[in-house]
Amino acid sequence: MDKKVKDVMTTHVIYARRDATYKALAARMRELRISGFPVVDDADKVIGVVSESDLLNKEALDSDEGLTGLVSGMLHHREYEKADAITAADLMSSPAVTVSPSDTIEHAAKLMYSRKLKRLPVVNAGGQLAGIISRTDILAVFDRTDAEIRKEITGAILSEFLTDPRRFSVTVKDGIVTLQGEPETADLGHRIVRAARHVQGVVAVRDRLTYPEPDMVPAPGFYNSH
Image 1 (spheres, one colour):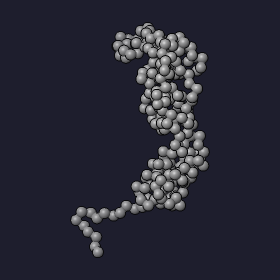
Image 2 (cartoon, rainbow, N blue to C red):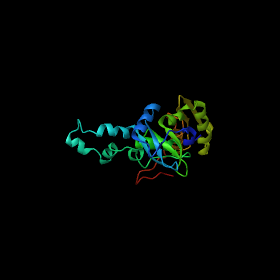
Image 3 (spheres, rainbow, N blue to C red):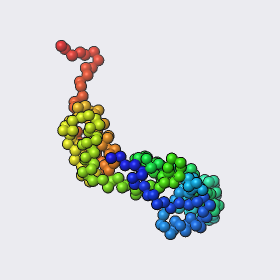
Image 4 (tube, helix red, strand yellow):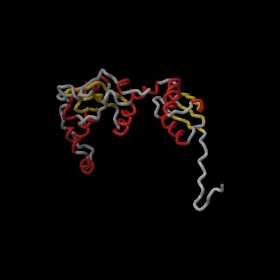
């Protein structure tokens, strides 16, 4: 099973229009206990994201109190611009990092990790807001049962490599997969292990495979006798 963003995203999304005021944004975040939301234009296309850190710039940078000249000078110019902002269009981080409903959970997770983001707006082919996916939503893939994970590995994974599944023993406990058996080649064994690691819901893979001995290659200048 290869879960997509559409399988775990939230479709009821709190968003802001580009002309939403600073006070309205702050009040909405506090009321709903959320740390940010997408900003859309009049066509409902996502044009940016406002986070609590964007709003905090105003409190932190409106005054230089407690900042030395050196530290103040090192602060990014864009952060000072946000301190003077009064609407979502001025406050937001743009362009927004987004995903589509058909993207894989793995792709969304990598984006969140590499960009240090807590959530990603989900947009359709036209760029309109379709949903939102958070770190918590991504963790939903680990709700898969051990039986479901084992079924995918013993079925789809081993069949993909055209190998006899009877050569292998697959056990799954708390999302941890243990592979035992004798693959025809070392390369095949390594590929099976890599594929198992990418099965959704897998926490870890323990490689207990018995690999064939590598062929002996004669050293230069020496030959096998016939």
